[in-house]
Length: 64
Image (cartoon, rainbow, N blue to C red; front, top):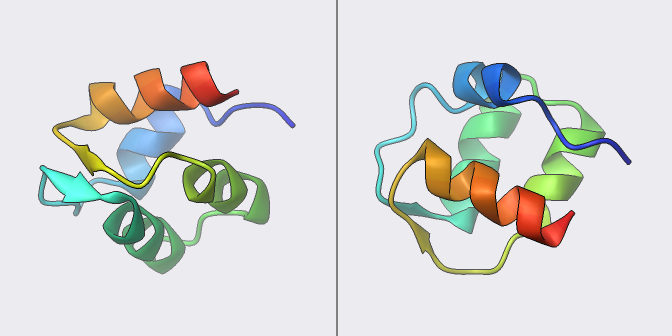
């Protein structure tokens, strides 16, 4: 499965109040209409606090 592009993530997570946890990333992405693949990638992230979008994309790259 291809990782979501950073521009797409930026759009999906534009309302996230960082720092936040994985559950909040999933809630916001789903509310913005993320596809199943993107939600799957976000759901596979470690359950920790993410300080900003860069931390999310780094974690996705490491996990992917």
